[in-house]
Image (cartoon, rainbow, N blue to C red; front, side, top):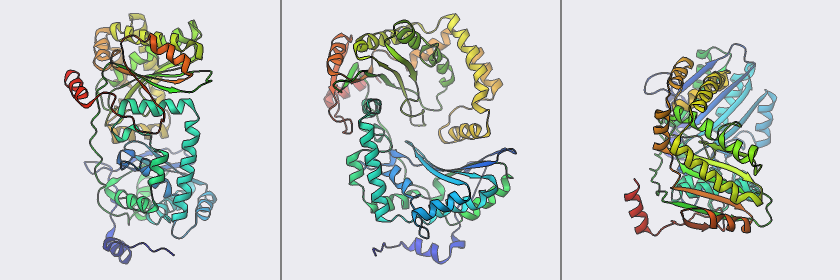
Length: 478
């Protein structure tokens, strides 16, 4: 049996756990770490144990570590093998899952409300007494590698990976949370255990709960179950510095024989708390956010070039406190790759140049102000919105305040907001599909600065320009 040394702090914790109670649940003030939504009719409860740690904390060369480590927590405990642990959760009508993003990981517990207390105890057992056996970690690693292999066979998944590289190369955001094959292969069980030892701290935790139980009762269950959570804060995440997008750059992945082309036009955009975010949503609703949008009507309804055409601020991930992205996305038939790409670029230029018509703006106002209350129609959706606001500063306006902001919006104000963020001349175009169709499109894209052929979507792309030119471009395009 392989033995792993315990630190003095850990030995002290085991010897006198009550004296080391570290998790204090606070629902107000600067130390706030608890959100609660009570729903008297809820037969099932949800507990979200949030660590302020995501793949931004992945070491270079070990991409996928955060995701792998937190998933490993659910592969059995010191007292229960994996099958036994899952059986224990199923017996009480509970389930556990993990979701790792760029700056947070959520371990989510869903349970019958009648069994919430024992379900919380099982969650705590997974976090505080994880098995973390070599064989379980290595097995999980192989599962993750197999998943990546499947993704690489899917052109849309490849498009997302390359778009990340185009926007965020040189930072941990250049890779999705599940990492890369090479990164996962480099990770050892000791890496997983060491990562969790550094990140699973009381000062790194937020708890968000939806239940029919009294809030004070649930607080008591959580504080008792997590009393021995190690105190302290997690290591800080790295500061992000992005290379500027200078000119139009085309990123190409050749997939011979593809019947459609995955197409994206991408830029970095705003962070979650950006002051004009709700206003920009009005513009995007008309441009590409709905089936009545310009992109959809022009590329699909009128031309029939693609089955769908949209624009998003959340294609890669929703905007976070460190920033976000904006993508125009379509998947035209191979024969219409050039037509769809060029027309999308033209529509984008027109949108940034002229904004919306008066008729479009009024339609968007009515649609969005009427739809807004549905974002908070359930206790679970309200909890998710509050958690997003708490972690990333995302706006969470009451319905009257939102309607006042949107209904007072003018065309000049919207156009100014659009032009501050969007730039049709400095962007990345990503095409994944048949080489002949892409080559034809490449020759027709106006003002194309450079073409980068991506042989391996998992490998980090080099700087698209020599360092001196990048520095000069950064100075010229702040």
